[in-house]
Image (cartoon, rainbow, N blue to C red; front, side, top):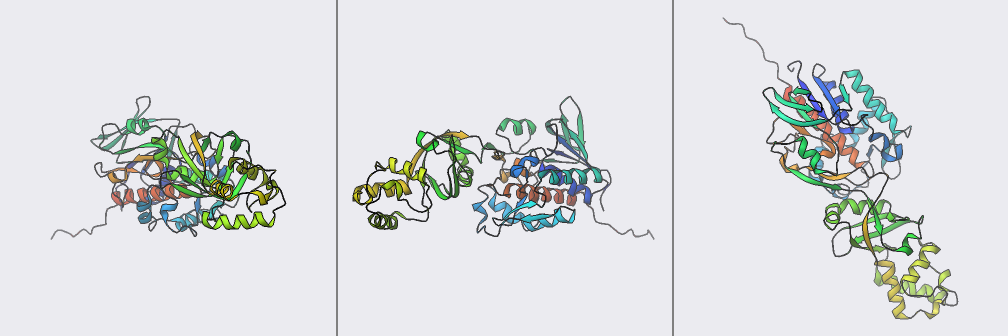
Length: 423
């Protein structure tokens, strides 16, 4: 059992904050759980995820290593998933009435394909269990008090608490977390944007806006950072899963480079240059009398092929049989190592994620409690944990929120003791 009327303040009414609040009230019904959300509406970001469908987790069936999808936080989540992982998330929501389904690519959505249904369920559960939701109010600072903790709200109001959970979500501004945790010995990692598209300084590429490739490999020249997947050519440069993955993997590198970096594109990622050259030579010889414009490798459309021929210095009207060995080698280089200059971050409709936040080194890994501040916990994107697209960020939010809630419950739970009469 636990002492009644314990008070927990949760800073942030996003996915992690509301999920933790519900978990707390289900196990600690007499506790006071207050969620303070700075925005006008809790879970507003959740309602926009997955294009309004809410990709709330992933099956992880094709994920060979967590580092593929969690550039930061892999080791921590590997441990925490044993306590609350993707299957637990599926079961948790379905047991509370939300039916889910998995797509062939492993992404998991509500059967209604409506993010509102996920948000409405969490808010309904919170209301039914007595969670206090304070929207449109900012927590200016968290500080210690004689009772344990105090949340200082805008307007001068103060809320005393036995425990505080920081679930503020990601922010590109370090100052927001610094102000919230002012004077507390909490180590922060400077936040920078993740999951963004690339501006590319090449008019010919931008002219191909709307072109998509099912598969391409991208690499930042001179680095280890690379990613593979579908690619979308846009009016500002490049987007799509391959770009978003690379931006996530190399978020800090790109930030330090002021978002200017040489990018190598392999338009035929299954082909090695040494094997592509003879295969391309055989194709050109077989179609020798035809113009280069009408003969292209499988997977490339005509517009992109003409662009690549021009970048290789080849005349699209020339005959296939007239391509010299030197020209062929240049074409192979263009097809496998086509270089462009990234000139900045471009807008992306799902760009909600930042890397950075509270350093994982400052936390107890099993509880997500700040080592130097007993009773202070951190969950979701306020942690230095982030992922690529596909439901992985929300899974991290559910997992870390659940672990924080269970840790707080354990903190407040006291074993029953038998009372022995005095003789």
